[in-house]
Length: 577
Image 1: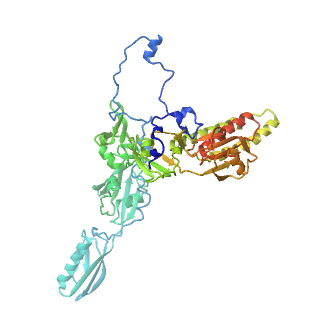
Image 2: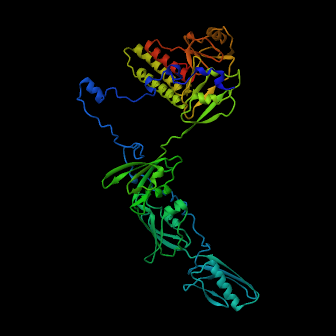
Image 3: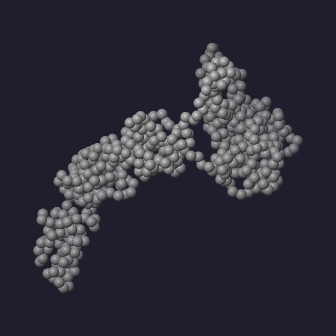
């Protein structure tokens, strides 16, 4: 059976009547309720004219800006300086490459003087030697003579040696070759690196190996996009590490002894922040780049919908706000700041259901969905569901309750712990009260508000608009009562018609010495809290006996009692002083 068939549909109040909603945090100041912005001290031109304050004048009602253009949006006060951000690729040189020396066995490696080649032959001709490559780039094969191998790959060396031996011994000869070792090289690393110097390696080591040996690129001054490999005054390779960081591509020049790696000075840069995985300074290879190129560099978080571009131009500073699909064609220049933003709310909310019901526990709903629409879609067990006690747990209400409680405790601490004493006797009493208050504040601060929003009241359900993350509670019919707080034996008891609040308390052993028998609360299943004097008990109610404030200071007792009520309403807990 549907929820709304159990409770008369006529009682669903489709207007949000504040009088029929009891927010669990009843002590939240009225200013926390949402309201329209107004300037009470301001006088509009037409009002001023009526009051005789200003002469009648024409008002230009033409819009000064098209707020739907995507150009306008939230702007933070200061432009981010690119120099204060780490460069993109800053975590590249943390020692991960310096221990990865190449072994010279790369199939593309080219033989050079000083290398060693193992040659084995068996059958009609036997040979097992390690042959060094001499200064002329030759190896000497017994019975065949010198063989030029400089500049050849390992596969080409194998073919050359095989051909040289079989040309002399054509029948019944097997040949095997292997590059035994390579000649180490010393490479100079200079430019904008942390520790310029001369570093040893092998010809097949990567550029990153030598850069890491030097401590990496200077993060403030060095370029990640202009790195040159020089050999005898000519440029052998130019490396852009952004291509390696993003696509994994990097040139692999074979180093020779005396080569020089030069890290150029950092080029123009921009600051990128907002909804990105890491805020970085991005270097440009020219004076500008497009929005599409920047999106390819930056790693955006999911849901990014807008981009704020700020910077200086010849005609003055700019601050432009674009939808993400319009940003690709924009031009970004040196010194600009780009902030990516998830500035578009989802049109779908997710609401959870708990308690006595059939079906799924989570529902995806449109943003403007109301409670009655959800209840229409939920089936509940007949005669087992307390539909009149439906409530909602809402995160925003929980935050309001927590903030209100924190403010109250802070006022209590400030007011009474800092008050002066006129006599020694008064000072002694205040010390005792201060200890009680500090202990009470510490325990009350640890309590977590429930965030309960009461929507069922006086036989009606307020048809409020749901919010993302709401938890709708549809309680099951209960046959019990809970007696808690300042009673000797807190317990649950079977509900019996005709029994009074005092009857249930006496059944729980009666009041404790700390109980305030004038302040007893009834907590309904829907989260509403009422004074026991004014209500009729129902199954599922909780009787909560409040503690008395242990002080003879009437003002302090009143304040503490108010906070005790606030804690009980927000957390359903009676905190004892």
